[in-house]
Length: 157
Image 1 (cartoon, rainbow, N blue to C red):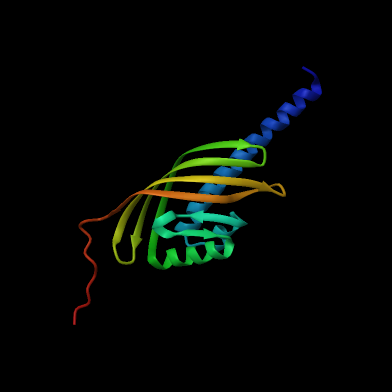
Image 2: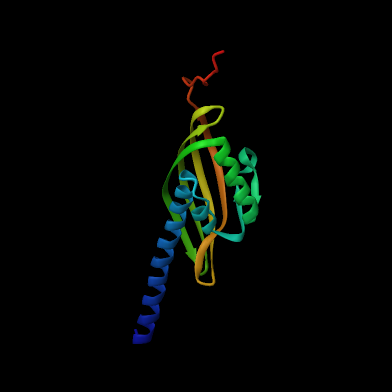
């Protein structure tokens, strides 16, 4: 193998490793952005034309303005949340990547109280101008389990 072929192979492998870390950071930043109600962090991880797709559960939000509005709505409806995202299966193909990520989330819903949420994300990432960001995140919520022992606070007159 020639020295230039080895250098090219090494550059490609390094790019793959750096890309994987960048994508894993985006996945973690999504959780932190929602969990900490950090709009600046949350908004920094999406391309302007990105799509956040919660399907029938919470709707499809296309573009940054819609994603911002959706986040604000979530923070009003869900007063506390903590994401655990696990086992990301990431496939990188040049400047495009996909990921399958397990979801386990505990939330405090404004009306239902504590709720356990489970499912998965299917993600599409794109590297534009050298920067990886979400192009699409689809969430399939398979478990929505309110705490059966929760009793809403009632006012006493």
